[in-house]
Length: 440
Image 1: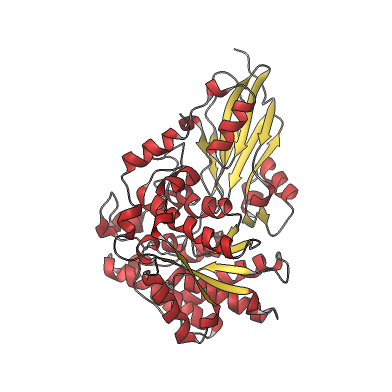
Image 2: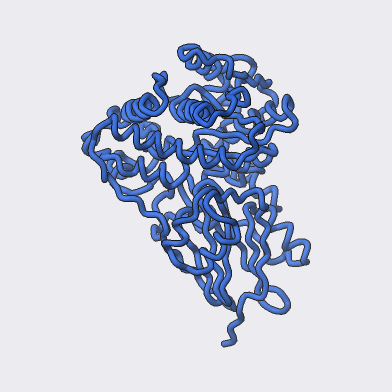
């Protein structure tokens, strides 16, 4: 049986997707091509890259960036198409006259925190090899709230400092802000970093979405900032309920999970409102990843997880059940590795450069080392309280501010009044149909 090296690698990932903070993008590609896990793990920032070494192609991504691939059959040999979006792959195949080869389910998502290698490519297509490059120690720290909080907040601040150092000194900075724990922590840390660096915090705004002027998040955001004497940062983005389109969200995130579609619908509305007011605004930070770090999803809402599975499985909310699990989706990945499109793709669609320090490995590691079992005793309510206690302690230690902590509320529930969440909600079966219709 004849075997062929990869004849061509088509890179459709935009250069704007790469935000490597400790080396050049080409150096990061070289590290990836080497296959040395320690070199790959050392790549800092946000990235979705491939590296090539002869017949071996390696792909890797940060948690904050999606990365897909499709192995096509060209007339002279195989062609590997690397992209962030399914529709980009479809368009490339159509451009080459290869649409008959395409189906969205044939695309593959590189799982976050892993390097995926395709060694020999021929017919039949081989299975890739997957190797983990990020494996933070679990429950590695003492159960002291103050020290845990300080470690977490300092890790997030370090990522914010690295991010700010790459931005222009006068570029405006927005934070998608609800007054919740994650967006609140990010806002306070960004403001602290600007002041500590001698920059004017006047370039900072906290954008809060309100649908038809009824959003509970808007009132919560104002109370949060009023308590701290920081209300001048707040800018409420009011949008009409009629502008909300779950179908647009399905098209942009290229997925069908209902809660992610609901959140993406709101993210699109917020981005559209900001863009209407500020045509040139570029940088938008958020608190994506904070719920995953603290395993802060309501178990009573149903589903297949229990507190024991949540606390016993490493990085469950970040990666899903894992690449070796039967339930792992090759097309979509799992956990936030899959769901990141709800924030990343919606921001990119609005022309923004998204950033969340809470998805970065140092911050994830600071959370993964928390002794959750010891500190909760397998108690759900204690688990839910722990996040507010640790994060607020960290913000107090790092910034000196006493961060308000409010009960958890989903984006889609807090942005609008009664009935808004129902308006944007739909069944998985319905959203599957909508997604399929875009590729029919």
